[in-house]
Length: 148
Image (cartoon, rainbow, N blue to C red; front, side, top):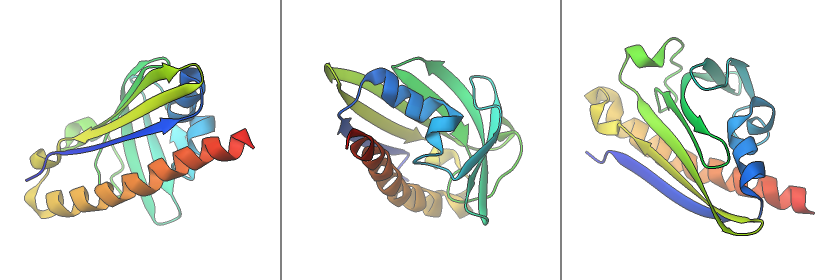
């Protein structure tokens, strides 16, 4: 069972702007979930809503401004609402590395699929593998649109 999803992209923006787009509720809803409720901050729990049919609780694991942001969730459109630390979950990590002034590499890693229950592990991996392609494209487009 594959345990990791990894993606990298280059964005023409400062590390501060990219971090804020990932780590602040007001900005992340411009490219990722439709809405966020709860405490979207380190040590906090929030609910990400993707349309009316899909919601997912997240626990914000860690944040290092302008470099790193991580959360735990139950992947694969599970509609899990509650404390994700009490059930098998995956860890989503964003790392931001400045390549040049106003140009950064964003690395996404999601780990923990092998620890999920067998009945959802493979489908969660496939759904998130495809989902990250879509969502990271939306993140890229967010900055492309802002630059115009």
